[in-house]
Amino acid sequence: MKWNKIKNYVSSLFKTNNSHHGSYSVMLSCVVIALAIIVNTAVNALPSTMKNIDISGSQVYTLSDQTKDIVKGLEDDITIYTLFEEDKTDDTLMRLLNRYEELSDHIRVENVDPVANPTFTSNYDADTLQAGSVIVESGQRYKTISSSEIYESDYSYDASYNYTTTQNFDGEGEITSAIDYVTSSTLPVLYYTTGHDEVTLSDTATTALTKSNYDLKSLSLLSEESIPEDCGVLMILAPQSDFSSDEADMVIQYLENGGHALIFTSYTESKLTQFERILENYGMKTSDGIVFEGDSSSYFQSPMYVIPEYGSHDITSDASSSNTPAIIIQASAIEQTEVRSSVTQTPLLTTSDSSYAKIPENGQFKTAEKEKNDAEGPFNLAVLAEETTADDKNTQLVVFSTPYLLEEPFVSNYNISNVDLLVNSIGYMCEHENSVTIDAKSMTSETITPSAAAVSFQALIFVILLPAVLLITGIVIWVKRRKK
Picture 1 (cartoon, helix red, strand yellow):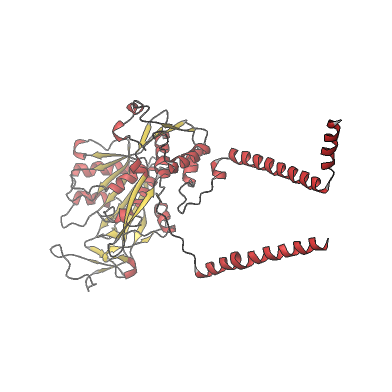
Picture 2 (cartoon, one colour; picture 1 turned 90 degrees about the horizontal axis):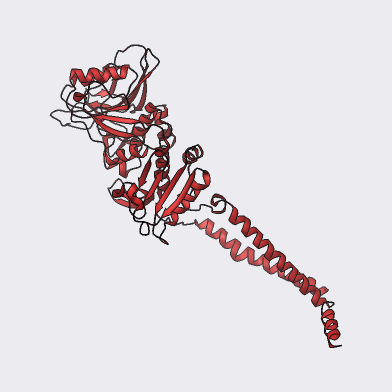
């Protein structure tokens, strides 16, 4: 009897208006919760490229098209090891590596705790491995990347030599370079001559070439009978003393057989007859004197620090399209001489019509101003010479008429294209299409300062319009309910 009363009472509860509204509310809540669970599950299943939007100022987590092309073209399996202790991983680096892993099934990322697994690094170059390092390994070879290569400090100077420090993240550049390195079937070898007081490659230039996966080797021509067969590009970097006749013949023979050379020249009062013979074989010689720029918009700080115009060519196209200037210091003009018709020349860097060349007296200039007997420009400061040989090989020779193309601190502290011109010249001659040229990205926080108009617009919307709309909507609903 009591059970029937309870059942009837409960049944009567669900027949009231309140019970109908309550049931509807419960059902709606259940539907909303179920949808939330489904949506969250679906979102978690998406790749990080879709669910994690890169809102960092310099797009730290966004992979470039060059990286995508290299990674999507992989045929070999690659393992990327990170060396972090448990719970001490680098979130920025790991998020970036997740993007690599999602781009290709050939890439696997694995963290190894160097404390828990102290013998793991014994199979690699342990001298450069420490916490925070990365190892990229394929079946052919491996490459190690230190934490200091991933995170680097950049010191930028303004015209008054005041400097600012920027923390840069070069994770993508280093990792993509390492992937290209460990999967390349052959690596181009660059030989640079020694024994003639040549200039030394700057650290910035060496790093750029290594990052582009070139193998740098020194070469003493006196100890060789010919240029090595694996030479991708022969580099002759502004010799101060002359070549021997045999050395010059060796270089000329190498070029005439389809070789490639990158040559820096330097103004010197000494006659370098044999070295000049190499240039003259391809219709070039450097004139007497140093080039000055008369147009103040075409030089940096000094008329001898020329900002040249770019010629139309693949070597200069990147710098030209990005409006990144080059700074050419103490250069001579490259003159064209008589040469066989099969040789073609393409100017890469040219001065303005206001330029002029001065010959120093006892190593000094009386004035930097243009004088009556000074040669008038424009002048070529970099030239590409090419010739197709009898057996259809393509001889290529890039000449820069300055020993200071890679001079520090300019190449490391200023946003100029000098190093890119070096890398692009070698890449063009080697046909090294996957030469990695990905710049580091700034990690420095930037303060966003909205304009006064933007502040006023936001205040109008959030302080006036939005509250007014909510208030009016509430009044309308309240009036309608009062009429029922």
